[in-house]
Length: 389
Image 1 (tube, rainbow, N blue to C red):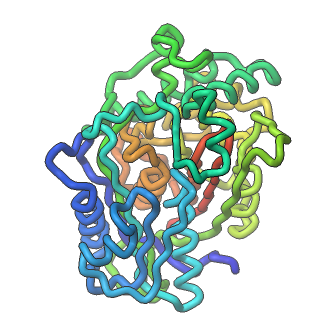
Image 2: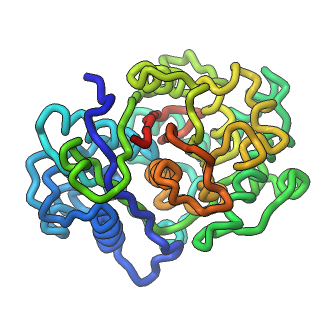
């Protein structure tokens, strides 16, 4: 089913906290929900569809629906890590088109910073029942060293350099300086990045995202509801989702599942990468951005380094502005899941509500892309394209 024109994003909210020592996880979800509904001009009583993933506490949707007092006729708990919330937007549009709900609420929240998590640097153990654990956990695979493997392989295959990766952080920092909520607001240089401490060769500290608490929420509604609200009309144009895993040992670290989710979204929208004015790209690490831009079709495979270099991702300077809130590299990365915030900033850009210093001129088409899991092992990808009507 195509989602082109079938639903609109009416509400978006990013929680301002970056360290929530005084808030529970459920409270963060609820505060994000309240903020997004207020932004849309709706209330919790209007919600009849709810979407959440593994970051939700307790029994997930059941616990959160009870906590927030929601009366629902449709729920979706699709779990693909950080890409879940991008996929949720497309699923919400499809559910609305199918008549399963008319006002869909999507929430994300996390407290890794308050809980002292060393997110990305400790081995992940998802439980003894996961089929990969017995084979991979003993070797100490972590998020950062698996992404480092992708970066090293990309460098080997295509000649990508640390300096080219550093330009991604530089662009994010140029944008974050205008975001009062961003964790890292200082503008950095290529030299700053490559001279920062090595975390997992070839990724330096400044190649890695921040660790933050917080969250966000979105409200996706039926067209007739969107047009009855006094809000900008942000229409869904297309969506795609895909998975990539070990494939029985046929491992190629140079590409991601975006090679499938991206073309699916563009085909649904009837558009090409050349039509897009702004991109929100999941940026857990600098290599994540470079690979996604290639796989989504903004550069030929192996040419991502040239695309991102020399300020080409900086608003007002480059041809492809990205992550104008500072992204996960500088602004926030709540609950180790950054897909939600990518959609929120894309909505801001389409509404013309981004900070004036980073607002993209005539921004009428935007893409948001999320990655969840690990590029080096198994991950999900979600791509959506939105248009200001």
